[in-house]
Length: 235
Image (tube, rainbow, N blue to C red; front, side):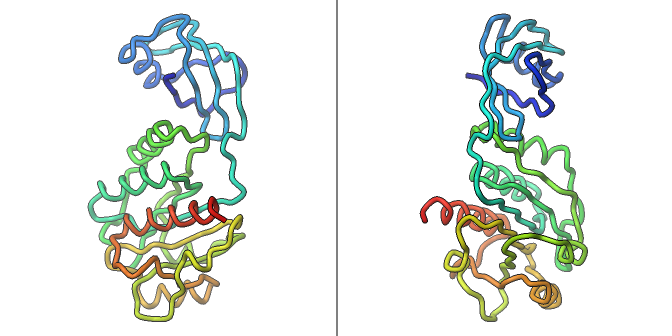
């Protein structure tokens, strides 16, 4: 069944936005009476029937709803330095959404080669990945934030920083508890600076390793995401 993103759905009647309407009517050639599925990105799936197949304002009637689909007992927040090649950062967003993540904050660090992002395209990638992987919850993408500003924010959960400096670090998968909210920092291509690492440690972040291999930024983000999900599924 075809799936459409409806973030502001409320009640049994809904009109798809212009983008989703065009895809529904012009691309998929669906018509009145056809059944479709909706997702609000907040935990709910809906079954619906097309009542008016207009290519700019397709109207549907909800026939069934499921709430808190796939709700987890933990939240995962990854703060990561966007890569110089935006394609690699987009790949991270896509894969982490497919695996399972709740919040993403692009970090502006001392060694960051990318100083800005274009949220609109990145939001579309997240939405597409959510729909493709049949997730009921859509990750939140925050604005790009400086490392110093981000590190001082309150977070109620376990806090980690993955870096490549030759200092004592525990393996992430060995110390990560099940069922606890987790925030992990992933640095840009040039890694975190020594000053940033010290600042994180002073603010209660635990230094961790993601394994023996030296990973690209986007790979490290996906590994961290997968590790959190796997630990919570296996134990």
